[in-house]
Image (cartoon, rainbow, N blue to C red; front, side):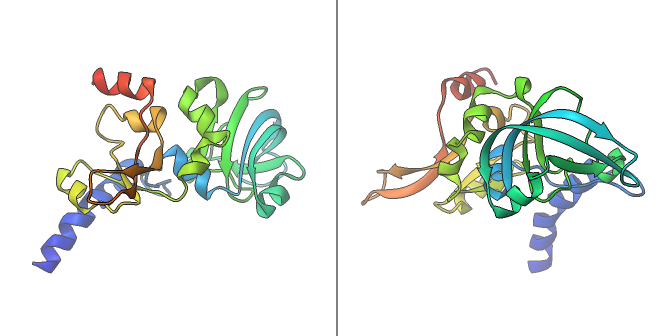
Length: 211
């Protein structure tokens, strides 16, 4: 019984990793909500790509960045961006990323190696909630945990007060672009308790009503 239950729990995770992977030397990682990227990053910054070269380091693309705005920065992040350079694999199958010259990106990174498992997105393609989130709003939710869900409704019953369920494979996935997981006061119990939940925004409500 225990083995069967363990297999049931692990099977969706294994299938997801295999889905995102490619044969041979493959890049594979589970998806993460933008808020998680913010909370675990050494640095979060709005940058412009000034130069790129694949000749400085073997099998790497080195990017010269202009940091336009810094939204989050710890000591490791400061060391990483001190000279405005980060690098990535020159192979997509090894999680390499391609940043276009002259364009603005928001990057939430750790260390000087950028890969496709981390958050990087062209600024003009970000939603309003993503923009406000990375400028500091996501910080309010770093005490919450976002639990990856594979569509199992029964998992709702097992959520802790500090968790929000996230289903990026549901099709609509309104939470990624239009919401954040914040702690709030829940008065449905005998005494008020702090419980994490998805924040309601106009775009979030519109997304949910249209799906």
